[in-house]
Image 1 (cartoon, rainbow, N blue to C red):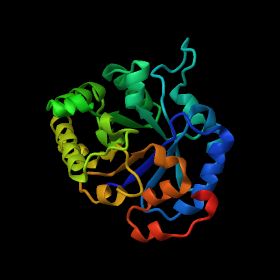
Image 2 (tube, rainbow, N blue to C red):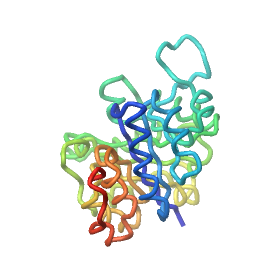
Image 3 (cartoon, rainbow, N blue to C red):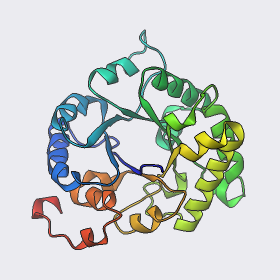
Image 4 (tube, rainbow, N blue to C red):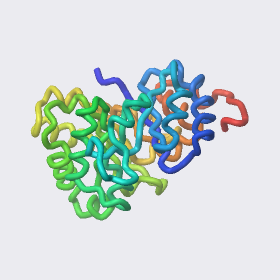
Length: 261
């Protein structure tokens, strides 16, 4: 059985004090979650959020990591720096990193290998653009990203894959539950072909295309979908906790304090 994992990607949002306030509000709402709960926060927030979640069931994630252990890489952060503050997960290859900061399948591979070597769990993002989907290139694009991005990894079960159709990120659009499930099934099949059927069956694959409180239950009911990489909906405790409790339809009607809504 694969343990579901719901990870919030705060992107470039929340100062350290705002981040602490958010996780303090979140902790009592997710303390009895039946899935793994992760917040992936801006680097400058990591020390404060790490202290705030201590003793809770919320795991800490970063949004990027450099592939070198140290050196003349101004502005970058190494895996050992993240580990010192209790970071467990790290997002690698997010579409925004690929689009705005020159991330490639090759650098995704280098960062992923560095994270694994340091004992971090990579959340590796893959996905196609709208043009690629409409021209029937989805499987070709995903195959290339998997083949190059996971090169040299012996056991895929030690990573998390986030399928994020680029056309569904921050646009309000989302793949249907069936579309997401079919595409993730292809990803799992490709991993089985390239690596081994057992580790492909064990690897957790999230859906990262605008999962929210309204569609989380339907998406998470799909057999191939093991969680979500949540963007905007992770910035409010009430919204994020509703996704975390995708298995509890009564959460939608739960009365929450006004400041959490």
